[in-house]
Amino acid sequence: MSDNVTTTKTEALIQRGKAVVMNTYSQVPIALQWGQGSTVWDMEGKKYLDFVAGIAVNALGHSNPDYIQNLTDQLHRIAHCSNLYWTEPQVQLAETLVNNSDLDKVFFCNSGTEAVEAALKLARKYGKKAHGSHRTDIIAMEGGFHGRTYGAVSATGQPKYQKDLDPLLPGISHVPYNDLEALRQHITPNTCAVLMEPIQGEGGIRPADVDYLKAVKALCAEHDIVLIFDEVQCGIGRTGHLFAYQHYGVNPDIITLAKGLGGGFPIGAMMATDKVADAFAPGDHAATFGGNPLASVAGISVLHDLLHNDLLAHVQTVGLHLIQHLTTLQEKFPVITDVRGIGLMQGIELSVPTAPIVTACRENGLLLVGAGADVIRFVPPLVVTKTEIDQAMKILEDVLTKTQQEQ
Image (cartoon, rainbow, N blue to C red; front, side, top):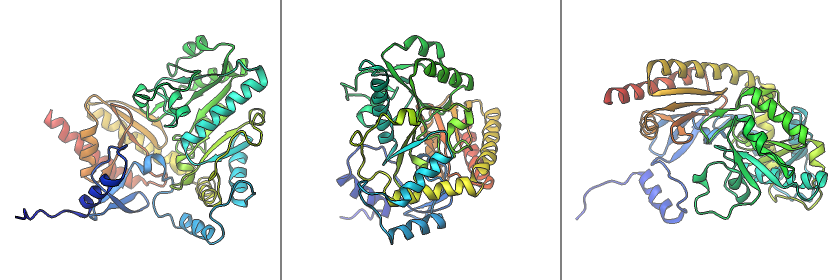
């Protein structure tokens, strides 16, 4: 006998997915169908403001016409070829990154975790080449997140990501973030690199102190230790500067990039100064798809808008607008214990569970994502408008008001 229950398109898709997709994500029960700018629609036609942006990936928003045209044009030429051969898009993307940074060489890969793996390998190669075989130890930060491959997860300073994965990569240790003395005491003659995020993302949207970063740079320079900045989430315009290190005025020896670099197309990059990059020789590292023509064109498209269409200035302006809104909400709602971040990478720390608030916002048309146990992060597309921020903050305010009334 039928119970006359109708299965929605979303429910049907979820059932299909659970049958064949490995259970590695706690996915919410919606299926996104298409997007435009900072707005997305699900399979049932419901509209959302997207303040997740693929977790800081969709820098140009959804369905950017120039981005689509550039990728389409490249598909009509050549989508992929091996790195056995030169291609103009890869060289052009590398030139743009180098010419607008303080780094000299680029290695392309497919993701942030691969960029971190490349950085760890290069740092150890440089340490041994410059100082001998004992230079292998890497110091990373508590609360940091660097990816899911074995080297990257070993460098991640959050035990929850390492559960049941031991033994981890040896020679990597962790010290408290923003604590110069702890780092100083941990350095030994075997230390080859210090790895950190200028703004911790998964660790709760925690920016580094300016004086701390400058002192870390001086300490690394004193001991010829490779300073690696993981800018996978905080780079590519998210702070209102092309690179997060430019906000601080502290130049690293290596930076890792991904997420926003491709605007939705998978690409990662590891950049280094000539001094460090020269430790790599042909055969030392590789990536089959790294910097292929299609991925490179995606990167070129993102960088063009950031550098030539005033998008960086826009990020600074709307970033301040977002901060003002969040600060006002903090004054109104005691459950917000902190507001922190730079540009369009912001977080609010709460004294109540974040999951119900994220869920309620989604039900009311705003997509948000957590960052750690007690922080909600805001990483919308870099093209988000002040009006869209106003709309998003109104939804959040209504949800917080209801939460406060129910307490």
